[in-house]
Image (cartoon, rainbow, N blue to C red):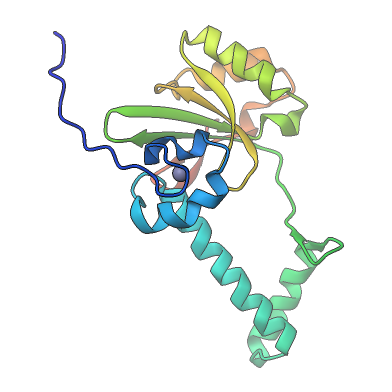
Length: 191
Ligand SMILES: [Zn+2]
């Protein structure tokens, strides 16, 4: 039954020296990101999306600040501005929806991780939740910084089928209607 060990070519990150797939667990993940986008985009597909989104933000910022916007895009960017709050220092804080987002991430074809984001929005302590999830599913679980620097819980293995019931039973403040899965890049309600 034992699987034959297959030769694996490990790609080492030129920034932090870890195997690229472990960069996100290292302390310099932010610095690794540009290298990863260039050299290991398949390991971190989110980074590319994130980078593209940032690029788009920049462009729309430039348009707004230079006043170059066509008549019809002017009205839509005004509407957009109402949705976002500008923090001191010019940072934009997007309104955050209160929801828990679960995503199954497959790395290197064999390793599967289930990420859980947003529990903290319901007053759940992530370190506590991580321990409970690890215990319940008899697997490794840890609080890590996600691609956008927000903390999330990474659970080893695919637990996406049982996790909704566990969350709603364990944390009564989280309604099933607030739980979503990411499937093929789309957000799908769990309820
Ligand atoms: Zn790295």
